[in-house]
Length: 238
Image (cartoon, rainbow, N blue to C red; front, side, top):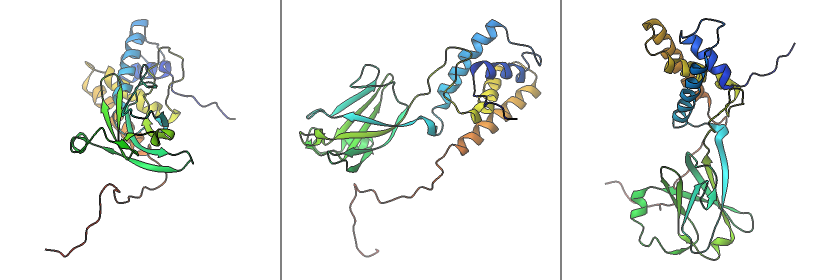
């Protein structure tokens, strides 16, 4: 007999977490106040976990339509790229009118400040990401000219995991994340409980989360190449 996959729902996680934390007896259900607070705590936990490690299912290739002479583009619900504010931008490439890709490279604020002319126009080679509280701002260098604006920039972004608002809705997590979410919430709920319960919740929350973070990596190996922004020099050792 086969059984349907049980995807993580807020209701399942909250019920088990209260039981694991010793706040309810086995088989009992949390009351309405406990459920409401459990939902808030679980959303807060998820928002925090998004800052730790990659969640491969949240990665998306986001295209940006370029405008000649426009250097900066904002990414949020009211921005020039209308999407929910991404968590981060990992890499990017430029796609020309012949569908040829050319990598572009992220740079730091220090590198941006050292650019000789930030308003210079031409083909794009690098980009700066500003993490603002309500949006991401991406500035390109060089500023796209009329030729560059015929192509598009594609950025690999990590999307935010949408917060849930209903007990039975399907969350943006695969089923293998259930145990980590369950014990993570139990660890947050067990404050004030006997030390044995606190210790058990803490240990299991850390073990399950670490196992999932270690597992959430690409299956193929990664190779590194020299940074094309730098040149090569030759000479004798001194």
